[in-house]
Image (cartoon, rainbow over all chains, first blue to last red; front, side, top):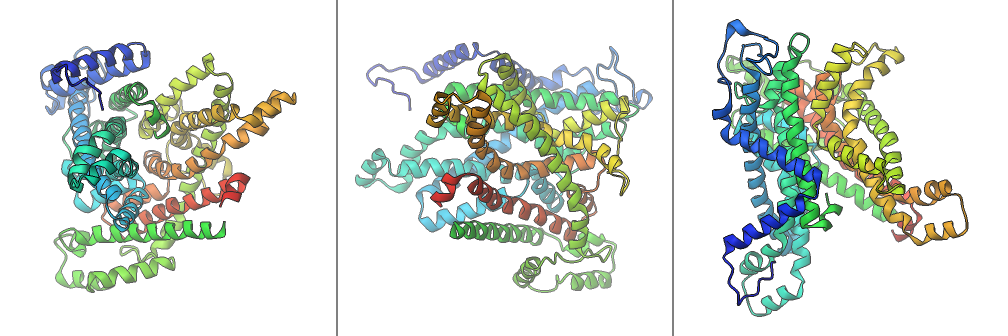
Length: 297
Length: 314
């Protein structure tokens, strides 16, 4: 991809840092992208250092302090068990980010393997894969999630499985299309005529050329995956209690929406800020890195 | 044209059958026998035996699958084991509520989003264009259930402007419409930005085309050029998008129906899933898949009908 003159060796780390700096400088001309970056950094900071910055234990029950309105002691008030909602919101960022990022990563790897196989393999295999992708895709996401969660039982593992099932077809389709185009490119024909094995052609020659867009598309899916996690948990079919998922905070707050509206307010606003943050940052990065992708997303 | 349409419908049927097989396999692959899961571990062996027979679970799985597909093809989705009612009837009772909800949601989104996108394309880089751009990204990314909950909190509970739960009195149209406002607002909000973006992008493309320049050269009034010559073409990608939107709309409908306690497919699925009523979940899920799978050929057909270029190319 990058055309470094081979006679001037540049340390890989330094080159990467240089291009990252260049990217940041270009990002700084885009106020929405910067806002996105800021929101994402706040979220990542909360996810990483949450346990050290929460003012109170997010699981600790204080029966005497049920439904306290927001105050200096409890910024977002307390819930039906007297737990500090602000601490639970911060702790929720770790759940949202870890479930979202790890399941998207698994879906990327799976989608990559399936997409390369479908695109480079025989025609019948391609057709069979396409039918499978389209069939999975034709389930509305939340409904597919509800069905799988009902069948397998609500747990973090099942939830990640649901995300993988939903996201993989999209990535596989993207990689398949790119592989089909690369398959007949001259550089691939040239390597093939040298007798290189299909596996080596795929991994060493085609993969590096087509993987860029996958990263951009996948990172732009993070907000919808976070929303899916919270949504399923809200419906009681996601992460089981007492884990302070934002969906759980919303669900618990919804039952007390008349008496303690601050709980749903506190559960919803981190969802809004993170989805906005990731979307602003993602769109900005996409336009900087690969404007052609605008047509796909 | 006819061949193409038949091909598309054939593909939709194939997708439905594959999706049903996947769903069926999923239900039967999980460990534990469905009768025990449905009845709980305290049920006597006789009761379990009877339920297995009633649901045909005592037969080999492939035979069950073939029978299930055969029945589904004739519209028979099985029987709800609890209430002994036909699943098809239960689904059909709930489906109209969901369809009305997503159609009004999409409807108001189109009424706002399409003109907004059109205007943004004509007045490119104006304040309204930039504002629309930011609002689009914002509304697309905010989860619809947060919108629904916040809307319920502010407009129903705090301000008391709209009813909190239900779909309104049967037969009382005004009451039903009043109950529809907030749910369809939540379902449609994300699509305002989406439609505005798509229409803006395709309008920008069409406005640069030769026939628009020719129309200008003839001195036609600008509104006529925009509405009659440009928008008519620019709207076409939107039609295909609207068919794809059904999946997302059904997902938001699940939340809206549960939050506002409205009857509908989404509430039916969640309620049945909570009591592990598999036949109803299966029937309702399959109905949503079929809706989505057949929306695509219908959209293709509408595009072909609207666009003579597509029609003659087929």
